[in-house]
Image (tube, rainbow, N blue to C red; front, side, top):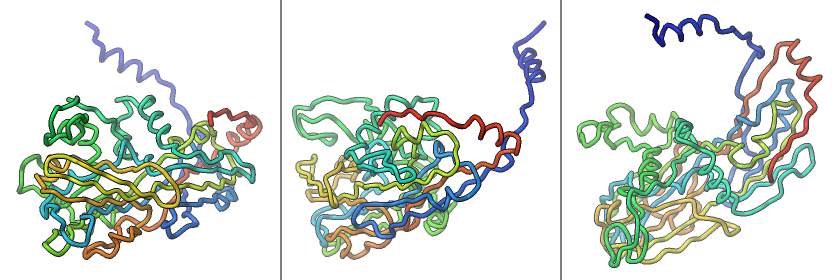
Amino acid sequence: MSSVSDHIQLMKSQEKQYDSVFDKREWLYINDTVTQYDQGTSIIETTSLSNNSKFLDYNSAYLSVPLLITLTSNGATNEGISTAMPYMKAVSFKQSFLSMINSITVDLNGQSMIQQNQLIDIYNHFRLLTSESWTSQNRWSTIGFYPDVAEAGGFASTNNKYAPAANTTNNSNLNEGLTERLKYILDDSGVTLDAITTSPLSGLISKTELAKLYVSHLSTKTAGSATTSPVLQYSVKATIMLKDIHPLFEALPISKSLNFKIQIFWNNSVATATQNGTAWTAQSSQFRAYNGTLPLMLNNITDGFNGAPTGTLRASVYVGDTCYDTTQKGFTGVTTGGVGKQVELHVQAVQMLPDIESNYAQNHMRDVSYHD
């Protein structure tokens, strides 16, 4: 009597074995030409990559971006913020790491391909939300993405621990997307087994080793006092795919001699939010050099910060390893990030077999169509 497994085994035995067309495959990277990101810009030039003899695949290329998020009170003193927050439920990115990019310009071999348009992160998040599916979920943690999925939402007539009156609910208890994005940043004091206090991550790997591996983690955790602000700093190693930034890179085939100049304008920003003991009551945002969007999402303070009393929080996010906020950088406990200093572009390079390369070169001329 036949079975499905018999047919599958027979089909596998009849499959054609394909010969490799690539003689060598490797990843190359170049550093940003900018080393200080206080002005919120990056410039990446691919001249050194285009001058080698290999084919480059910009469709799979990505930016490796060190980020430093600093969460404190709004002043050097404690100002009423709890000294014992459940730290890993405090702050996350909105939707994905794409929220860090306000706009880009791209020149190819001296010709302008992409002109500056601000707020492209809003459109790029729309692209993610409409193109990603649950079958591609395995890449979500890499790009910091998880859609906001509210299990319950609506308007309350009075203030409550989930939201102020007449505002929709948004917190890690009821927003599954926020909950999942919080998990992308590790805390060495957090438990590896749910609700088992004797299973901290530090028993497996220390904060020092997490930094050596360039893993996103809570790099600074300093409790506040009556005279000092609590300090939380998240060192995040963000991966941003070029094809997610702009459709041009999604349409490019593997090619030689493409000399790109990519300028990126980052959403470096600072936000303050005031809590009255029950709900958020006021907020403000500041941006470096130009108006953008705030990449960060603060969890509800009563639910996420363990019933903190009235006070004002200050959160900043900067590319690189330095907090440039004029208020926070002088606070006791504020230090540098632990996952690198500079933006890098990583590109896959392939070396074809001679006959394959000759055939590809002869038929390589093609039009590239993309939506700007």
